[in-house]
Amino acid sequence: MILRQGSIDWPGGAGTISVTGVAPVLVDASLQVTTDVGGIGRVAIRRSWAGQDTTELAAAAQERRTDATTHAHTVNQRRILRERTGGLLTTLAESISAAASAGIGDAEAWRVQLGQIHERLLARSEAESDAVDVAAELAESLAQIAAAMESASAKWRLSARIEVALDAPAGPVQLSLRYLVPAALWRPSYRASLSGDQVTFTAQATLWQRTGEDWPVVPVTLSTARPATGATLPPLHSDHLRLRDKTSAERKTITAHTWDQSIQKASLSEEEGLPGVDDGGESRTLTVARPLAVPSTGRPHRADIAEETVSAVVRWRCIPEQSALVFREVTLSNPLPLPLLAGPVTLITDGGTCGIGEIPFAAPGESFPLSFGSEDDVTVRYHREAHVEERFALADHRWLNQRVELMSTRDAPLQIELILRIPVSELKQVEIILDRKARTSEGMSGPDEQGFVRWTVNLPAGGVASRVVSFRIERASNVALPDFW
Image 1: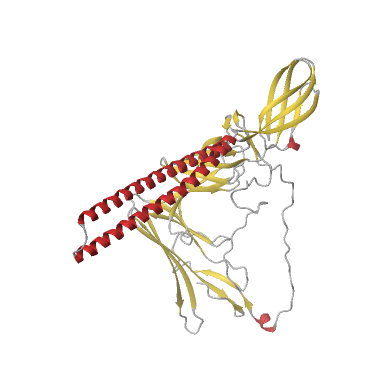
Image 2: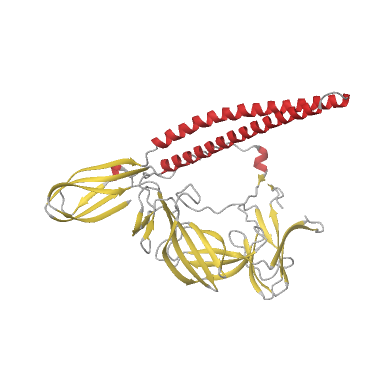
């Protein structure tokens, strides 16, 4: 939405106000014109094309094309004459060679004939070269004219003006124009700079527009509303349930399955990331901190919205099942008095950029994590293994183990939160049993409802630490469970 406002010293009576430089792509039906004195009559939008006349350039280009075609024919003819003369010289040289071998012929006559043909060949070669040079000059001239025509065509510009018929008494008149334009977009972005346990968090907006109307240094308000999109309910998909009687084999046996379950997040958007803006399902408005100039070039312009420095919880984490790295995770609460829209965040630490991450939609005060790179001086090794415990006169126990080794080449100790995962059963006939006494490392907390277990590992400088979690699956005799380990 574009808002233009201005004051006019109206002489009084009926007349027309012309506002130039408006976006030629404006939506006509969205135009709203108001004054503080009324008296508005007919409102019209006038569009016109303006640019350089290329008629003379087109005529010159046609002339050069004709000349180029003519000279191309000339070059071909002179090439044929030069080749024929060269062939004649070759034939004469062969004849002279044969006669000289036989001891017949006149050497002086041969010299004269060779000289004449050679001079003719030189003349025809020079004529061909001159014709080639002229053809090259014509081609270069034609290319210059074509470039000039393309440049002139690019300078053609569609312009628009708004004409407002006004009948008002003499005096100052406040005129306001509002209209919608396409080809103007913005997206949220952020910058997080870490120094110790302090994070300077900056909310930014990246804007670009190609409306044909340059925006000088003006106040900018950003909105997540989509005026061109009507309100629609979230899509509902059919979920068909079918019932059937179990077979006799199914009544006797329960077939269990294993799978990885992602934690779902509620959202009305079916898209992830760009090009949409995730505003949490409610239209938001944000105000850019300072007036901004955005020319109609289609190039991005970045503007700061708000900035705060807050304390954060900094810790080193390792989740070897997902990545064999120890990474620095910073958890902070949204320090701004406005919600953070989902978008990319540039991560800065130690004076340099360490990567680009993403943040979800976060309300004021809501916590969210950011990852500021990994610790390259710590090596992580992750192993999975099975161990069978034989029991006399009883069924053997099969223990499933996860082992993690952390090796440091740092010259300082490091505290790491190590996270592993064990299965979670949804069936009462299947039970996950931890071996907390013999095999599982001490100091473990958990498992939680998602099956995560944690240790706080104090890794010494240049040292090694290992942790193991061991569990087995106890199931009823009528449960069939495939081997997933």
